Length: 286
Image (cartoon, rainbow, N blue to C red; front, side, top):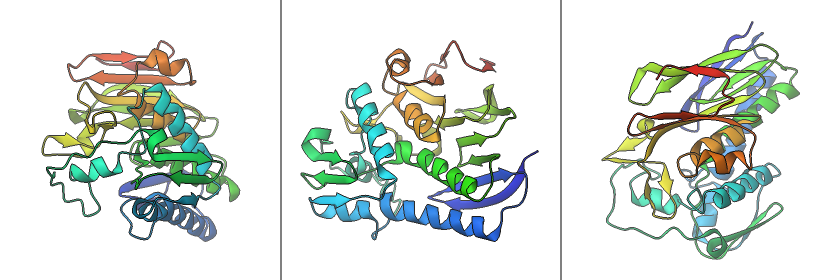
């Protein structure tokens, strides 16, 4: 049976790792180092990150070996959502107040989010920017980091584990894990329960990062927050895919995404209506 082995804060969110045995000091240090490496590359909130360097000067930049899966998923979801889900929303988020200082004070400026082909090209581990571009990989990056932390655990002999980064969950092992789906309008309630086994479950909702009538889930085509859907959940083989797909469900019809990806899903509309995949391994209460 798994039990809480490690609880900590990372990339602005609480994390919990459950394992059968307490983590070794070596595993603990390796997890911290892996998270710091990822944050130093992809965080737009750090002055010393690669992403912050890219925002200042258009050029060709080499990313670490972990980058291809993340950018390849973004490219696929950019196409599947017809440009709505994009890593190029960093400047738009800053203008709305979700900036490095967390000012939460919207400015009057509204810069158009550039299209992918206008702003960047990706080749292997190299990213070339054609204009100053502030990347934000938050729509899939936390899920990907969950996968990378689980890989560190495996490298240290931990095969059965649950890594939970505040709603981005990766379960590794032979036993089922039952997870409640939090109601986006009442966090003391659940709209249902699902079971995962050796899978990832990721949730996305604007209620955790909302201010002044705004939130962090932007449609790149308008540069403004979406308002038709208020919560999504995706179950997939990896947290990278589950996290990215949970965001994509705000913009694309599930049938279009299911044609490209193998996953289960739930989404809740602002009217309270709930849709879910026919093969969902769970039950809903609404």
